[in-house]
Structure formats: structure tokens, C-alpha cells
Image 1 (cartoon, rainbow, N blue to C red):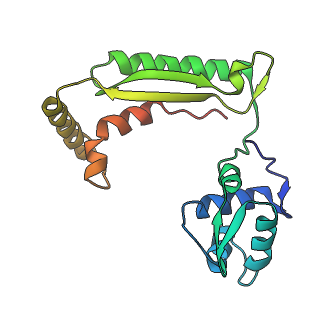
Image 2: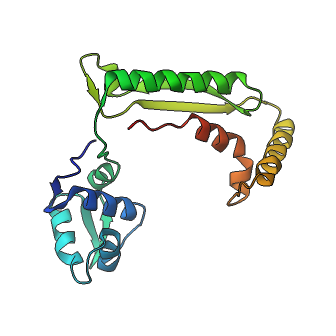
Length: 191
């Protein structure tokens, strides 16, 4: 979904609404103070915004003075406000991405490989000359199938990255280092 960055949603600036919904979408239930903080509203201004968002189906009441973001609100929270790109720009970005995929799959430095890659979205429509983005789903798997050898390789990589200043939040981030490192290398955003 794409929104106009200069437009309005429910009488509020579109980007303000999108960003507020992004901040609130993972909470089970939240009150007016959380909405005011997420939307950077002055104290007391949350009730009218909550009514407007509820009227537009972006939030729903779960309890007295408690709300949750609806599916429509989560879709809005994920919306892009980026300008559309030309098909030529999208094709160039896709070609560069495919070069990175080839490097990941052949370079022994990477502990993962791209198992499956799926292109979907507007780029599959040949008549579309302006695209919002290049939609790709990527499935990674480890190159090493033996769990003990993979653990040893991952530990060496974690130690190497830590020696170069990389910080890991927790054990899970260390254990999945092979995944996150490859994902970061592959990631690109077209503007």
C-alpha cells in the first residue's frame, strides 16, 4: 500500500497517522497517553484522534479507554510514502540484488545461501512503468548441514565480528549470526 506523504488520513497528516500506528501496532492494548506519545500530540488531544481513527476502521476499542490497531490499521502502518520508481531503476536494482545473491551462494565467507527467491508485486505487471518498489521474498538456509560444524563456524564468526566491534543483543542473535549477516548483505532499498 502507498500513501501520499502530503495527504491526510482521518483529518490528520498521513505520515503522522502511519507513524503512530507503527508505534502502536504491536501493543495488545493501549490508552490515550500512548496514542498521544506515538502521534506526538499535546496532552488531551488523543481522544479526538482515537475517535477519528476508530471511525475510519484503523483502531478498535478493546475496553473502556483502551484500543488496539485493526488489520486495516496494520496495513496502513506498513504503507510506503516513498515516491514511485521507474521500471528501469527497479530492473537495475534487481540485477544488482541478483549479483549479491550469486556472491552469497558462491563466496565461502557467507555461512548461508539463498535457497529460494520469489519476485512478486507490481514488477510482474509489464504495463506498469512506475513501481512503488521491488518485492522479493528470500529464503535462506545454512551451507553447512552438520549442526556441530555449523555451531563451530558460527562461533568463530561471532568472535571475529565481536573483535571488529560488532555487538550482539543476546544469545539468539549470536546463534543466528549466519542469517542476519547474510540478510544485511543482501538488503537494499531503492529510492
